[in-house]
Length: 153
Length: 153
DNA sequence: TCTTGACTTGAAGCTTACTTCAGCTTCTAC
DNA sequence: GTAGAAGCTGAAGTAAGCTTCAAGTCAAGA
Picture: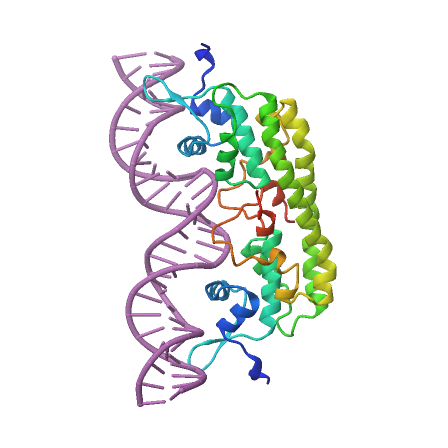
């Protein structure tokens, strides 16, 4: 049924703007799925483009691939995800985005006062020490969405 | 002159909340400075605490160590930085913070509309493809401040 | 003086998200 | 049918920001 519109990695890469290596990586990591043709080449269904769009947007929001995989895991496997399904997923982002925006605003509003006033004294300063549980978290890189780091100037 | 208040790595670690390994790393990377006592042990001046506070806050804002080093480089070396010096540094963050906040808000506001409406179609969707110059940027991890990633729930 | 505990170093390890490479196979167009 | 593009795989490389380790040194109190 409709095997005519299956795409190769190259095609998906071109249409999604992602590198073929990234697509292979995502498949290995279980973020996207692909069947194989007789020669062993990947064949992607068009819906994978939607999935990749989600992945990309999620990355921009700062989600890790682990988190994205988890989010995608909540999509139904027995049917093509509907608009409602995707909307549901995006809802969880809203919270996160709101939280991030709030944190950034707090940081910004605290800047002039805090650094300017000289209170930037580690333990006590909320700006230098937000959350008060920094040491608790492990190492590893955390990600900031690309667009949020774009032009420094 | 006032060598009495020089601190060891351990003391700086305790007072700054950073790991000694991180402090050594920062020194290697030229973000902080330390002299040595006769035994070769590091001795830090109290001002390093202020510097570390800046580094921490800057990391929270999403700056890379490279960027932070550059920012710190604009501090005067011939005298102890004044409040005004630190304030000047923080000014450059404001722009960045404002930009990041705006980007996040755009992302948030675009969510319901964009994902919900079904336009999440890669190339065309601003949400999935903000900036339109993703492919231009190299690999490498970008960082999102810890507090902005804290509680997922 | 002796024993801890703190400190030193360089090198290697870790995580995330991919990219690159080598060596080989398949596909497509002429 | 064949050249050359595109794809396959597993392994290794990359970047950032540290941490961990090994093996040895220094410092401070009893």
